[in-house]
Amino acid sequence: MTPTPTAAAAARFLAQASMGANRAEIAKVQSLGYAGWIDAQLAAPRSGNRWDWLVARGYNALTNRNSENGFDACAWRKLISAQDTLRQRVTLALSEICVVAIDGLVGGGWRAFSAAAYLDLLEGYAFGNYRALLGAISTSAPMGQYLTFRGNAKQNPTTGALPDENYARELMQLFSIGLIQLNLDGTPKLDNNGVPIETYGLSDITGLARVFTGWDFDMAGLDANTPDFLRRPMAQVAKRHETGASTFLGGTVPAGLSGADALKAALDIIYAHPNVAPFISRQLIQKLVTSNPSPAYVARVAAVFNSDNRGVKGNLAAVVRALLLDPEARGDSLNVPGAGKLREPMLRFIGWARAYNASSATDAWAIGNTSDASSRLGQSPLRSPSVFNFYRPGYVPPNSAVSKAGLVAPEFQLTNETSVVGYVNYMQRAVSKGVGDVLPDYSSLLPLAANGQALVDEINLVLAAGQLSSASVGLIRGAIDTMSAKTDAALHNRIYAALTLVMAAPEYLVQL
Image (cartoon, rainbow, N blue to C red; front, side):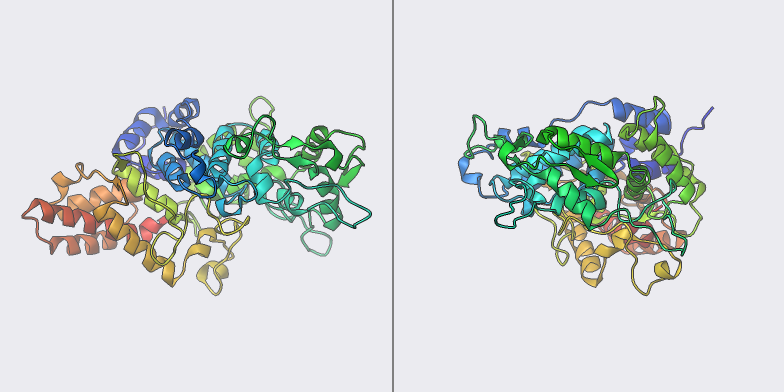
């Protein structure tokens, strides 16, 4: 019989599998076990969608056509309050692999709705099939806008115009196979000289780009005075589509196919590439569990990606279940150098909000854009500075111990003197005052606030899975013990200080 997880082990699991732990969710994990909690989350219904919330709040009024009004609110609302917390965590991970950013959603207006439609699409496939997801994003209006293949036309011999290659390149490089051929365990395949073998070249990009011609907004029965066209898959304009054969990655899309059939054939060629399983599996592990998974860990998860228990390739529910229940995720590597990962700033903020049941009494969720690293988080949902995400999966901090150890630390690409100070200052304000109309509930901490040790221990457990060292706990407790505990305001100040100090501690910032 599997032993009941301790509260600390449950909190650690939730740091990987959810948007954040709280006492209620910790109790669920302890009651159901890891597998039972995952199965319950996989079976949970979706918690509404962002698009409908925008409509219900009136953001589809024509005055918002050329603004981003409402987007940040609808994104934060789901991340902080949605009960299908595993689905939200996977959706966030997918949004940082198959990247679209709101500022690049041009050419149709209604950026908030286009961004919301894209997150809703990712959420719909978070526990679905990765091949189906590739098909959906490849015809989505937001992706057509962001990677500029909406309105893409076939080659014009008279003018010399060629199809836009942007999406063809990024589909291969970032969304499916990567730059280097991989073994199942994610290690690079080498040629006879020990040099990594590239997956594709320029001719593959130009060949694939021919497939992504003729796609444009589906405006049938609609106009741009409402955002509804951005929720529809793009439609084909036959006269703009390249009907000749297209060859890439050693395969050929035959001549004469319709745009939709050519797209299907092209995606099937890409999806058959052996890189897809290790390339995507490794990144999902990095997003949820550890920056440096062992080759064996990657291989185990990639094997599930290639074939679930029914022989289906790309079952994301099975992949997520496997990577979270893997021995390397559940503790076998805790003392191995390179274990764990730096928490993304967004996840730190959301973890605090979830731990203390932050809510918006007006349902306005007025947190806004938190991208400014000097005064906010340096990161905000669907606001990546480029298609390469906020950070690269292979990023190595230069001249660092991480570099000398041959490890990667992706999230450290967001980390510098400005962002470190900006984050602590932002969280200090958020902890004590809330953010906009989003306010926390510290009623669970108030009974502990007069006892510095009990207060710090509780915060350490829920936010950091008990991973702060005794030295760090002692320092924080010592600081808290110098503060008055004589009034309600004084007790709250002790809570604010303890939370801020725990969330600034290295053992919290690094999720093991």
